Image 1 (cartoon, one colour):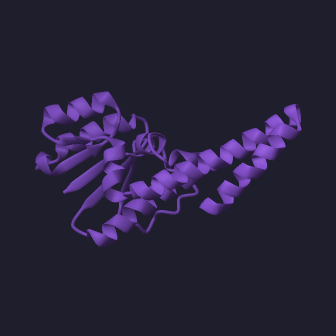
Image 2: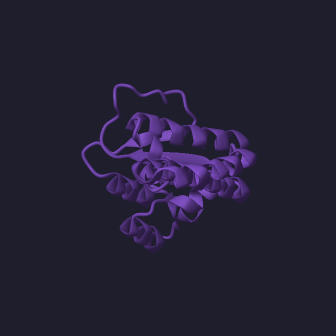
Length: 173
């Protein structure tokens, strides 16, 4: 079985996007790291990641078991189409992309399209309970932050309520 991944699409359509704010290379490294970890546990599965453009001079994934391809003068979608066309057993190939055109092409040619988040549920599952807790903590944190800002405008009433909310927030941690 092989997964062919539209690299930038996977980054921009997932939680990895937050690393792109630091640098595109960091987000690429994080994606490759996720795939490396999964490959260690499942050595029979192959991964090919296709990125648009040319490799940067600061590339840290030279000794990886993940095949990394840069599309150079064509788009990553075009490169993926060429790769699929040249594969023999298309039923064993999964194309990871949220791009509608590449997903349709994948179906027509007999391979398996897979949305980015479906793919990450396989290779990097996040427990729902942990996810819910993190979202709740963020909501409480944002609530406290908003109340601090409101306090600047409205004074003591907000300050009293914030003290109660901070107590609740601390108990949850």
